[in-house]
Image (cartoon, rainbow, N blue to C red; front, top):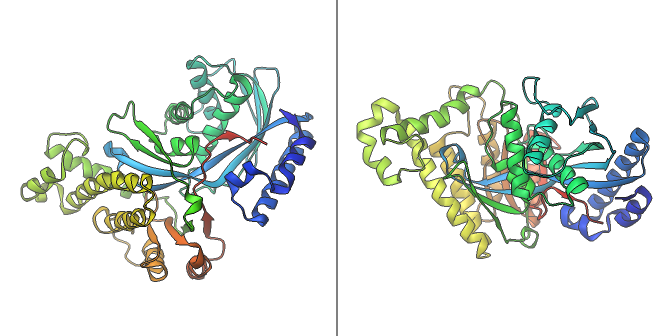
Length: 425
C-alpha cells in the first residue's frame, strides 16, 4: 500500500511505464486514466477515511477465434483488452468486505458466512463465492474496503462480469496472500462463483481477463482445460482492434442461442457422442445422407462449422507464435465467413428486415478488404462485431461504421499484456 499523494505522484499524469503497458501511449488517454485513478482514490478517502491504498486493474476480454466451440469441448483463442475495471482497496482488519461500485448500491459481505442464499447472480453472492474459492485453495481471506469503477461496457461482449470476478480475486490475492493466487486459478474461482450463482458459463472469459495477452484454451477435458498464454506483442503490429456495437439486444434470443449447441449435439448424438469434439469432420460428412431429414441441414452446417473452426484455432495460434500476423488476419476472416455461412449466427432467423450485424460486416469488408480482418463477435445474432484495422485506416473505418450505428459505438482497443493485476507504480 501507499499514500494517495505518493501514488498520484508516481502516476505522473499517466507518464508511467506500467500505465503505458495497460493503456497504450496516447497522451490524451493516459492523462484521462491518470485523472480517473486520482478521482477514485479521493472517492475512497471520502468514503472510508483511509489514505493508504492499493490500486488494481482488470481487463475486459475479446473472443478472437473459436466461435461457439467451447460448449462442444473445443478450442478457443481470446485476448485481454485495454477497457478495464479498476479498484482502490485496502484491508480493514475485520471480516467484512465493503464495496462501493459505480452504478450499484454499496454492499457488504460478512466473510464468516459464505453460504449463498439469494437466487441469481448478484455482486454480494459473487464476492462470497470467490472468497470461498480462495479459502478452499488454502489461501487467506480478510475484510477490505474498496471502490470500483468499470469501463468494460455491459452488453459489449467484452465480459464485464468476468472482469469484475477476477478483479475481486486479485484484491484478495494481493492484500492477504502477497499475490500468490495463480491467474488461472483466479479464473477458475470466478467461473465456479458464477456456477454457484446458477449461471453456468465456460472458462474463456475469466481466463482471458485473469491472464492477459493472447490466450488459447483447449476444453477437450472440460474439468481440466488446458490454458496457454501466447508470447505475442500486439502493440507492434500497427493494427487496432475495434469492437462495434451494431445495436439490438440479446434479450428474447434465448431460443436462437439454445438451438445452436443443441443442433450441434444432435449431430454428435448420431455419431455416438454427446458433443462434437470426439468426432471428425470426415465422420460428419460421411453421415450426412442418412441424417439430413432427422436433424436438419442447419444442424449439419453448424457441425461443419465446429470442425473447421476448432481446427482453425490451432492455425491461429501457430501464426501468432511464428509472428505471422498477416496469416493470422486471414484466419480471422475465415472464422467470420464460417460463422456467417455455416454457423448462421449473424442474423436472427425469421427476421430478415433486421440484420445489423450483417450490415456491420458488409461495411467492414468495404473498408478493410485486402488490408484487415472482420468477424462476428461472441454469441452473435445481435450486438457486436470485431475488426482488426490498420492504424492508417482507423479514422475511415470508425467514421464509416459510426455513420450507420451512431457516434461512440466503435471501441478502439488493443490486446493488453496484463491480466487482473495490482497496478505496480
